[in-house]
Amino acid sequence: MPTSDFELSAFLPYRLAVLSERVSRRLSLVYEKAYGLTVAEWRVLVHLNRCEKVSVREIHNCVNLEKSRVSRAVSRLEDAGFVSKVSDESDGRLVEISLSEQGRSVLEEILPAARDIEQRVTSLLTSEELDEFYRVMEKMHAALDDDPEARSRSRMDLVGIKR
Image (cartoon, rainbow, N blue to C red; front, side, top):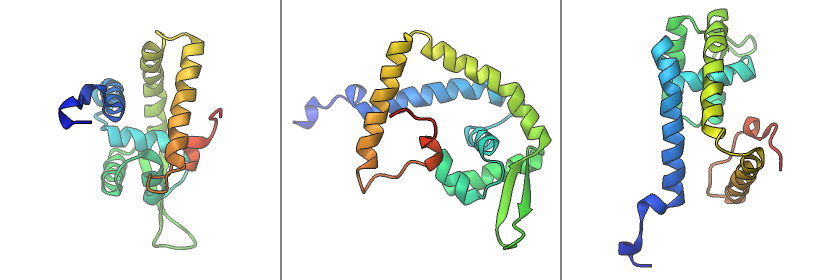
């Protein structure tokens, strides 16, 4: 195919990235306005909500962000009082991060608005269409799961997925 026939707006990776970015930016208006949180900080908070105590490395592996962004987000969240850092008892070099009570309260306030935005985006689809959309996404993930050059999905992202 000649390069002149390439249409970026029809290219699947581009279309997925644009949709993801648009939804993420819309969602960020909720937590940025209320608490000054960045996308990285939001992802760290919601990941900690599902994991209890984890290391920066574990967060990095599960939230699709570079390790340096996760480290900065954790530092800012700690300064804001939303997370706590505790040295691992068996290895003092390792640090475990967990949500503070203040961080839990912030999430309890933000999550209903986040779910509302998700509902607005998905409400245009029937339940059958949404189920099919998720099945198609899983097929695409499966293709990448079989590709040794592709980054692996987090085990946590496989929990609750219908195959």
